[in-house]
Length: 216
Image 1 (cartoon, rainbow, N blue to C red):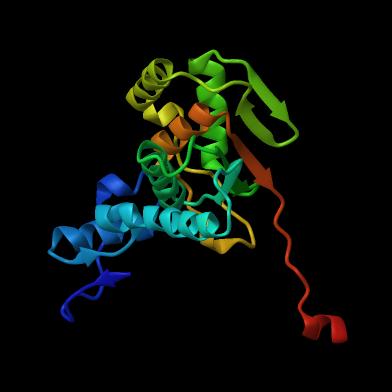
Image 2 (cartoon, helix red, strand yellow; image 1 turned 180 degrees about the horizontal axis):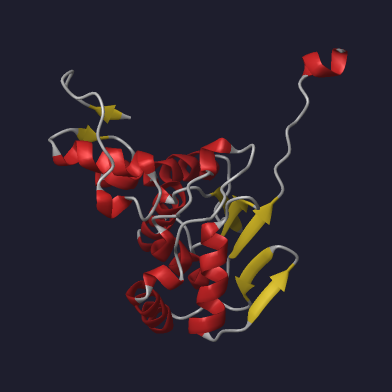
């Protein structure tokens, strides 16, 4: 969503953004530079932080139902703002004493577009030097990584970002809502997965026949 004056109709893609081949992000950034206000998660810190409230609302309902601890959380990832916000909410809840520990964070992407899973695998193999557990299409560390090592790993990867997070060549899936060719919040999410020994999982997406199709 973009709040824009009636005079703005179309923005040309800035040359610096053509490398990333992300037309929506490019036009949104250009529009914001002209005074428009973005409500997309990757371009508005308030909207991104607002996803943390999903966690607090869910925890309140679970607490009222007698649930005091979460084992794991599974989040679909496109650009990554939802997973990033949920991780922020979980960390805040843990620090405030609402939950005793942060649950294991698992992320899910489609096989046809999985820049985060690719990044996480490379991060573990080439930088973290941690034991990697690869079961099928899941990539994870076998044990939680301590804060000091995670900080070192993420900073090293960020310094060579194009070697870890770069556009997916041919994004395709029936899950159109998560076809971002880059996961913009990758550093925060990878940090959370290493902290909790979570996994980056891939799934095969297929169209589900509708009732009307079955009747035919």
